[in-house]
Image (cartoon, rainbow, N blue to C red; front, top):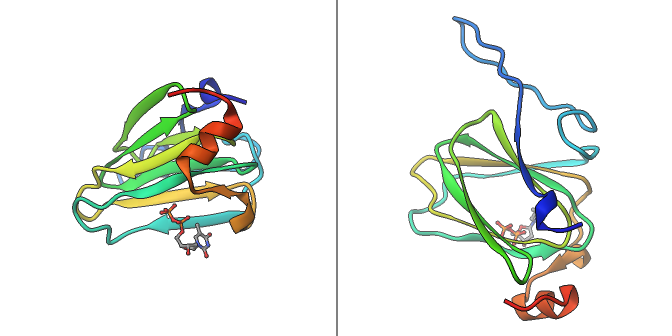
Length: 137
Ligand code: TYD
C-alpha cells in the first residue's frame, strides 16, 4: 500500500435541528475493524505530534473539534491535509510517515486504529523509515 491509498473519507452527517450526528462502523465507513480509539486534546499552541510511521496499523484521523494539519510522507512524496470538520476522516494506511501540527486552540484529534497499542509496530526514526520503504526524499 502507498500514499495513494490514503484518502479523505466523507462520513455521513445526519442533520437535525437538535444537532448533527455522524457515525463510524468498523469495516464499513472505514476500511478496517476498529480495535482502539485514542484522542489528542489540550495540545499547546505550536506543538507537533506524530512523527512516526506504522508497519501494519491502519488509522482514521478526525478533527472532532477545531482544526490541525496532517503531513503525510512516503519517503518521496509529501502531502499536507488540513482537517477542520468532524465529518471528514483521513484514512492512513500502513508504512506512511505522519506529522500533526498547526493545532487550533481547543482542538481535539480523534484517532481510530486497527490494532491495540504496540511499540514494535512503530518507526520513530525518519531515516530508518526511508531506508525500509526504499524511496528517496
Ligand atoms: P505517540 O504515539 O508517540 O503519540 P503521537 O502519535 O501523538 O506522537 O504516543 C505518546 C505516548 O503515549 C507513548 O509513550 C506511547 C503512549 N501510547 C499508549 O500507551 N497507547 C496508545 O494507544 C498510544 C497512541 C500511545
